Amino acid sequence: MLIQITNKCHEGCAHCMQCSNPHGEHMDMTTFKNALRFARFLGVSSYIITGGEPTEHPQFYEFCEALNRFIKGSKVVGGFSITSNGTWFPERYAKNIIDSFSYNGVPCGIKDIQQMIADGYIAGAKEALASQWKRPEEEIPTTSHALTFIMTGDKGQIEIANWLNGKYQGSLAMLVNLGKAQIVAWMEIPDMM
Image (cartoon, rainbow, N blue to C red; front, side, top):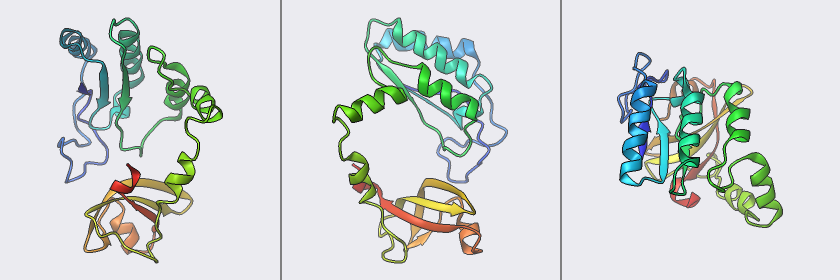
């Protein structure tokens, strides 16, 4: 079940499918809990917290905690994920989210992931993914969207960006065109699967 906890997003992208913007409204906790009750009625086991930009909700962490408690108390084994544009994520959330949640035995924290790597479950995944990156000076995307890694000074951003006729059209296109940002690498979306 997709739960849009806010329609606020500082990006305000013209192509946003949710029509989110910097002035969007937030869901209240009562509505969120009503959505969870409805999910229980439907027998939902998988949840996605989204927006807008969900981390911009002032009660973001409280919503995550409430959903985690709800899933742990459910008779259905389940879990949840958070869909974010990844450009605004307060450090105070990162450690709490990484360390706090486990969904009825499904690994989710850093320690669980490290153990999975040690046990061989993720062997070679990092290397396999790394081999899919392409350099823009060597090849340009032929698809309309590509996972694109851009550097602005010493800060990096990865986005699923629009490409038109081999030209980057993503959120930092103006900075790239002005030479203030650089496309470091890109990856076709199907290559990740």
